[in-house]
Image 1 (cartoon, rainbow, N blue to C red):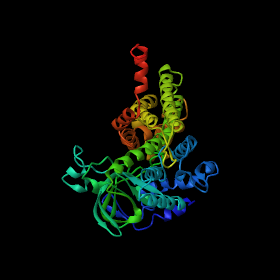
Image 2 (tube, rainbow, N blue to C red):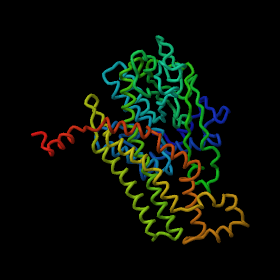
Image 3 (cartoon, helix red, strand yellow):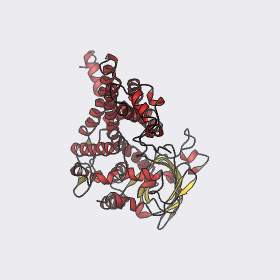
Image 4 (cartoon, helix red, strand yellow):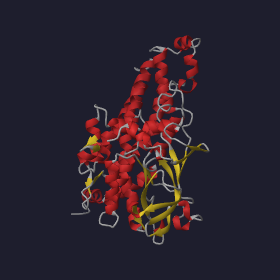
Length: 466
């Protein structure tokens, strides 16, 4: 098990990272990307925290790499994801979560093929060296009405451009790749089902981030959150998303996990989602708990805790959060076991209902908390005002409510960070699109539900079948 300092040292390897038009020499010391790197280090801190050490370590390795064999294993994994995200102050760390999701999918899909030994060796390499992993799945796609082979530019989906005796050469780009600047390896998998004639795009592989030709173009969406008084979460916790470009990148055969198998490409895309949406609903739980706790505390601070409409909103928030939590736990309890490998996976129907429920109702939850909080979310004072010896007594006097001004403003600043500022917008988009859109979740619910027993029951009740 590595500690946080060993993890951070491993990121200083000459990787090609760009931020706001400039090449970043060291992602650990950069004023913005360094925040993300230190946030990533939280996954390594957990293994050395006595309070969660038993949860974070399994058989001497990170629990994230423990192959799930039962419902209990999946529940334990979910609990670790929830604990890690709570440690990250509502922002998922995602350095081992998403990578192990991809590894589990690869082990299942490549079983019985020439690639399986390579996947097993890579899995053990990641586990034994306690590596941080990104998963690049979503291609840039171009015209979404067309498949990869019909695009005007064939590089809009990552593809094989050369097959050699010692490996393959790939080109193209993936988008929405989380945490890429501060991981050790990138796992690349297909984004969709592919048709005959699209063998060059049916590719899965892994490369170290510092591999020549890998270029990371970082989003700056959360740029400049540098005041811990007004932005208590986003000034200290950050996730960087990248456009991940593969510019004629060489991949040796021992790191190639799929090359030309269009049938397994689609299977791999869906199998990864089975795990990753379960990860998603697990890491949403601390955010929902925060919304409930913040609403209660704000109602008390504003002196409205006994108002009937506030109790109604709190009841709704409790029901929402506990429904998502209950569905997440049920997805593990209803797990299925892959017969070929013995690896367990969460029930796809329940997982997608959990994720759909969270995404569908998130904006309603935000509306309730904003209503309880009030307009000071966007009209309150800034950090320089609060630190001014001349102004602070005035702020403490006039912003006092049922609680002292300092306490009330601390709660309002937390609410503003979660609900009104850049971090709030980031979380709102994640709610709708991360780990699959609302439409993707509804499609999987429709595909996963067997309506025949319910149909037969209804026909029997109607006296149509004996």
